[in-house]
Image 1 (tube, rainbow, N blue to C red):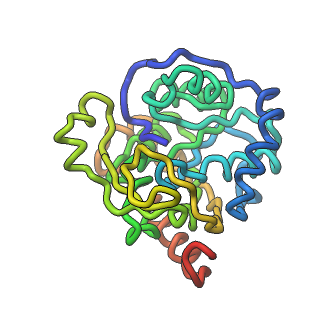
Image 2: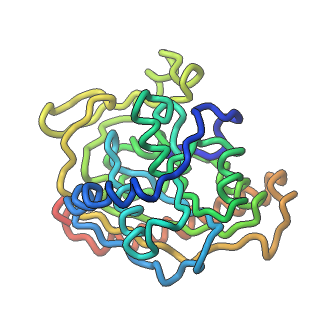
Length: 277
């Protein structure tokens, strides 16, 4: 849920992933995900084991369904014992009670050190580099990959020498209507410097109508489709030192986002109507 280049401290207390908790929580998460009639394709393209970095486009506003949909499908296909983790903003992970549950569910703070530790241990790490910038992109840009130029995931993959698996979703950004990001308001309030939050969005959704992004709305019942693309392994071309080469990093970033945009265009073309999918 946040760019892996943000921050460089341990931040939240480290909590061990708990597969038994996941098995107990799985029916509830499956039920929530089923509301969006999810379809996840492409598991046959994945390496048999980690480490790997799964990079997705982040969609859905205040209650993005992309993580529950992807992880529940992952558990069905590959089991809950595989060390599957996802990056999350320290602001959320430090919330009393909530952070502990998320940590037991596999969440780790979005900073380079923790991300590299997961990959060094052979884990699977899910990252949504666009973070708050992308998850609150306006409705008109719902079918656009927009990481906001955040290249932390590229440098992470190069340093760790792991394949990147693009996870492209369509429909999740039809569950809420984002009117604007409110980036200017966020800057004026100093949210970017105090909390590393770059947006103060305005959204439309039931039951309250137009509200600030901090107030949850009931998600619209859009069908969500996720496709896992062929892994991209830069370690065949570059060593860890390439993470410091701006030209290489930018070229890798353009490669991933270009392939993801092509896939998103194709998936969006399959849909006839927003929301009803």
